Image 1 (tube, helix red, strand yellow):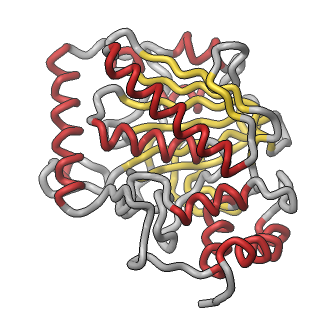
Image 2: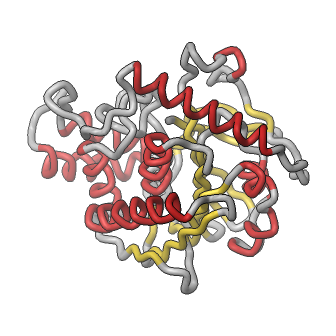
Length: 321
């Protein structure tokens, strides 16, 4: 379900933004989806009119068709990779640098423009207090399923990174929102309460989310710093189960510091090809590498690369390509 993302210094400092954007399948009106290399205009924050129930129902039908198409093409794999997806320690180290030390998009003249850009290593250096909340239209059954999925997944993320990640409403710093279209369009006040001083560009990214961008994560740090202080993930309530689960896996992991994508990464959810829908064995190693104490927040690619190779060799064994 892949992605557009970027890092810039706005408002509270660095913010890392990523979102899932699937490749346009033949059965879901591909002409309506913009080419990947076209700049995405960041429009002003506006109060959008509410959508009709029929419009929200059409979104549900659209995402259901999209999911069916991806699954029919053998995509959104949930097996974590296997004998058909081998990788070496050298490949793992290269993928880590490309995913953790580069941004996919930059803001240029009010637009998001595809431009791979060297960045810094960013991660959490404090416990993550994750609040999971739902729009009014999310059913009780769906809420229970989503909360169970997030809780299970955060335990996995905590084990892989060594971070203390708890689900709590007490002074949260990582917000996970499951919202229908109307509630997302009307969420500006809520977003400002979650992140006082949030930049207009961050608000626009969430409020003006196009249909072909399935979910989004925005992570914030203080000016001049690379340690994340807060994050907001938004997942559309209109998604069917496989896409919903894929958004949970990708956005929550990217919000820990793996902000970019790489076409060379396989097996991985940090890739635009949609092959994998859930966190893979390769991605687990990336998260473990990101939080290895031999790496430090703020390192650039030149500083991090030799250390990443040592760690990758320890984790994935020898071999080179």
